[in-house]
Length: 150
Figure 1 (cartoon, rainbow, N blue to C red):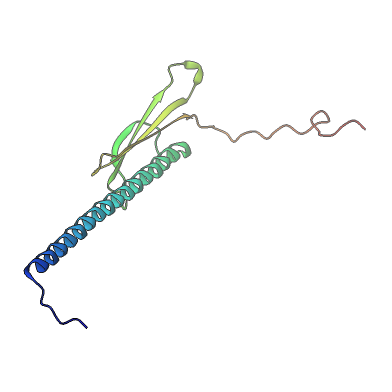
Figure 2 (tube, helix red, strand yellow):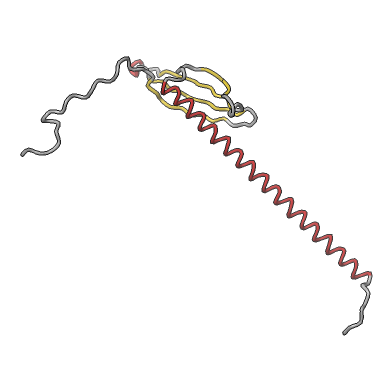
């Protein structure tokens, strides 16, 4: 067995340097992980806002198609809670051709108040409303029946 030898000045200085270096490496790694985690959370929040904007645009356009929302340009207007941070705007543009009748280009724009998010959804819609229910199809005659001659 070797006798106990006290640590010299040179050895204690090297040990202190190793501890400080390990601490610096640990702090640098923790900082990198913190930045990566923060960027990941921001990306998820951005995707969530984009998905909400898409759903809200489809909801506004569906309301125009069903007739529950007026088919006229309007807005920007805020949504009710829990989507009060979003606004919508509706732009209805008729076609320049008279033969198209009531076909309109309907564009819904959704904006988020606290971020630079802008989502647009446009669709061509026939906004004429039938005044009477559609007529029933003509009765099937011998010419329209399936099958061959027997």
